[in-house]
Length: 532
Image 1 (cartoon, rainbow, N blue to C red):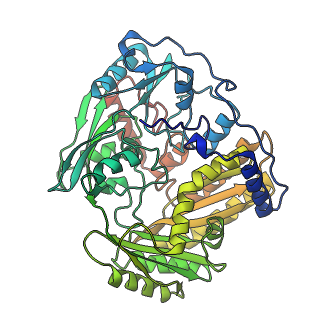
Image 2: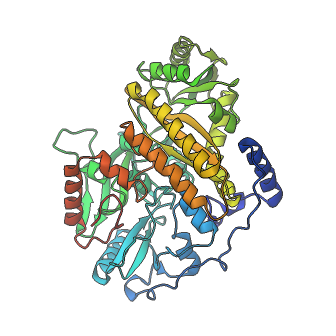
Image 3: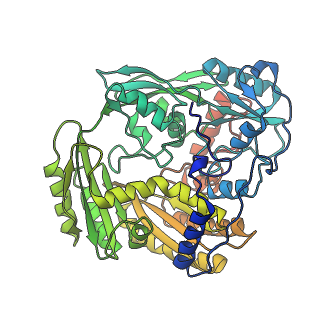
């Protein structure tokens, strides 16, 4: 376990929160960007200043060996990392803190916690890295529960077995991205799944939320890297068989993928790993407008080349992230391999993009992590830093968040226009203005995954209402265009109204039946995906 301290209220490490002079500089930049007066600095909360109720009960004897009701532990498990969570935490509202935090050391601790919760009418909320942006780890609403236990699995973080022959690894679900990569690297392998939350999120969380990762094509979700999974439910252990593929009926691991902690607690998984890449090739291609860039991204996605990176940034997105785009859009392309050089692949991808009017910056080839295309390097750093920037913006009273989706290529133009019109109108009405950007995070032969960012002036005390208005406008626009409510951010409580409109009602009935079978008392993450 790292001795470095995570932020009480914001994203990531506490030591990454900038000093007041740096925040004033950011405030001045934001004011200029939005055409308003520079936002005022506000003081973050401390552990002593937050408002948090006392725990419902002392730590019971059955959980005493691994559970705690300490104030900081409870506070650190009170919120996820959505804008709503950051805002509530910044204002000192920790009313949703769990009564107890159970740091499970193994499956016996998980089973003991679930058994105790079922007998005592406590809800159990599985907690990986706490990086949910959809209300997936917060305290259940309603009075049906005597209390809540946050079940934290980060002590279960080992790479248990590596199968060099099949190129797969058995990994405990509490392993964070850096922790599992460190252990795999010692054997010459990598999982190569890098969501934006990589530094703090866990393998179990990725599986439970169907997280999107590093690869922009082909292996886009953790789904594609999962070989088998093991989950502890209130009824017993649910474990699927290790197989490269199967046609034997509905796939049992698919019930676990995206289950968001309502059916059981994922404790370990076999995942497909690969040798660490040695050959890399990258390029950036600029376009006069976003539509031409989208056409190029589609051409590459449908070519069968399957680049590791094929991310399109509109002019505003490029500007925010310091990526040179000459006032237009930019397409970031990259290929990687442990086996062979990549010049033919990158040349063909660039040629496809240039056929749509793009201007290439030239191809970069390398055999290490450094020295790649400058635009791609700038984008990668901005991608990692974005959650820290959002934390700063919350401290300045600015309304800033993201939403993402996926749609077919034939629907994208109308979706993009509808989202821009509805969200920009709502920002004017609720905030007096704002900035909306768009990028593609992943692309498929049949459609892109557009990802939108909005930044708008906040009014003191009204930021939550402003954010809700923008979020609802965005979600309604996605639904009206037949797009998904989420490509990789999960459902949680935040997206549930639109999720219920997206999936067949008979499927929801089936999911409720599965929950009744595996979780008869309905203790696991009540209110997420379905009601008990």
